[in-house]
Image 1 (cartoon, helix red, strand yellow):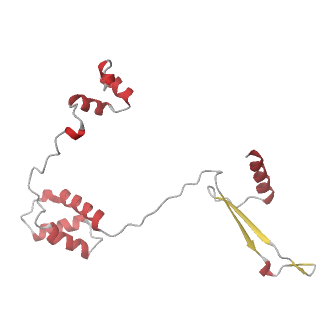
Image 2 (cartoon, one colour):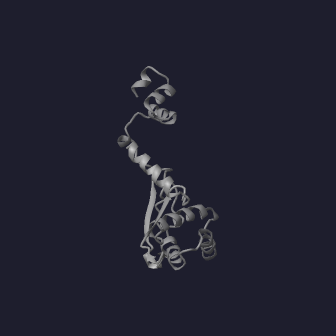
Image 3 (cartoon, one colour):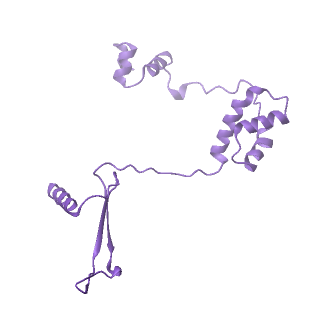
Length: 171
């Protein structure tokens, strides 16, 4: 942080476009991330080590919609020696397992339509209706236009042609 040589931590952080917390952390330990110590390992033994793969996973496969609290209650019933403090550990482990091995989730790509950006235009052949004028069959097309953002179907043909020609002259 070259700004730190002449400015306070707050000003140096603002000039470097980083948060104050990051600036304080860098000042406290100036080593690069690749030179820092590896993350610490577990401090206590895994309370679910012997039962998760053997009992919890088959339960999750048999009933995919089962809630983590129900699994927790069942594990306490089967193993009374388990501590009641494993509930959050079990919930996190189940959430991680479901993310990797659970049922596939439906993927949705939301579409956002900006006002005035997109219009949907369609012609329908109306000849099959058999409309006649003075005994002569009228072969005609029905035009439909809709604005994608507002879903507005109420534009008159004159308004559409007028705005379309205005837009084409502006381009």
